Image 1 (cartoon, protein in one colour):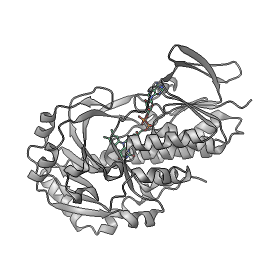
Image 2 (tube, protein in one colour):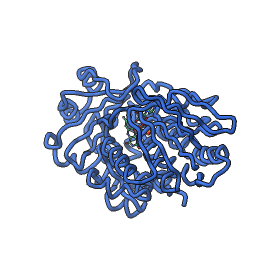
Image 3 (cartoon, rainbow, N blue to C red):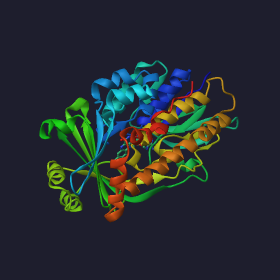
Image 4 (tube, rainbow, N blue to C red):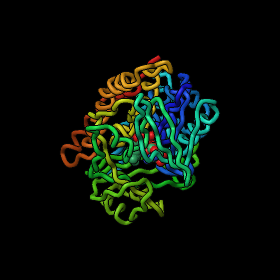
Length: 394
Ligand SMILES: Cc1cc2nc3c(=O)[nH]c(=O)nc-3n(C[C@H](O)[C@H](O)[C@H](O)COP(=O)(O)OP(=O)(O)OC[C@H]3O[C@@H](n4cnc5c(N)ncnc54)[C@H](O)[C@@H]3O)c2cc1C
């Protein structure tokens, strides 16, 4: 009898992996701790490299009614409110890379992946379930002890994929693994009904740069909602996605910013916040028949907007290396890890570097703005080609 691949975590990475492995011919069981898919997380920018995989998985058409394709990223100075540069997206980027640049609510993407997975015959998803123990049989089969309420089931798997996010527990089963490190930065997040902001803000992504902080906003939920994420240094390390934030503390961070930006930040009554953690992509990400995927392997700062995209890419590459007939699963998982590491590390480093550049102050900030202003828009856009132009292996 063919054993399933068990995946811990029905987040963006876990569900993408389920779809990719299912399409390859594996039976898949996804074990998700949450009892229901809740509205956790915030907006996500989905660049063409991620959308191309979603297209191949048959999910993109289903996602489009929930998404917005912004026409540009407008980069502006938080202090003066003046535009520094604008990077064209819309049709131009879709033509350039063969897939669109979208903005969505994370919950819409997760729900779409979930529904699509359930429509495939080979994928089972158990909500409210957790792998509480992992053991090996003498003949090398992974035994997952899955707790669902009062019921404890023992499931034999041909491989176990830990897609259980930045605070992964499966990661503890990979000897020498990297721990999640707090980056010293906090993301404040709020959403507003679209009618509460100017129409102009609903057609593009806004990126405001300032000393030691930046602000990103874009429309989500097919343009019905407006998503704001403000990023600041802070000493606060609580786990989770949904802690209520002190609105006054947030507004204090932006006290010296341009009046228009402050007015925007004052609009939401409630802000949530989460501590930004990273997991060094140097790994290791696999041991025997267990491998990590997405944030569990390599959580990164959101400053390149690529964490979910890298998890989606991981899914395609894992399935590529893993034919259902594979007899040496250990070699398969090592090949996946080796294939992914260099690119993920480079993206992770780019996110750190973006953060450094975004948060410059004084003459360094003036220099940054001048360089960006003088750079032809095509060149500014082309700097992302190595990220956005990635294509999944056939
Ligand atoms: C402020 C912010 C903005 C971001 N913006 C972007 C962006 O614009 N573009 C982008 O590509 N990325 C972005 N990201 C990153 C992106 O959200 C993550 O990289 C992505 O969600 C990771 O997906 P994942 O599947 O690895 O983990 P998650 O989405 O965290 O999913 C993990 C799943 O595992 C489940 N789980 C946890 N523990 C267990 C367990 N023991 N057993 C079973 N299930 C378990 C969780 O409930 C969850 O469903 C952003 C992140 C932040 C914080």
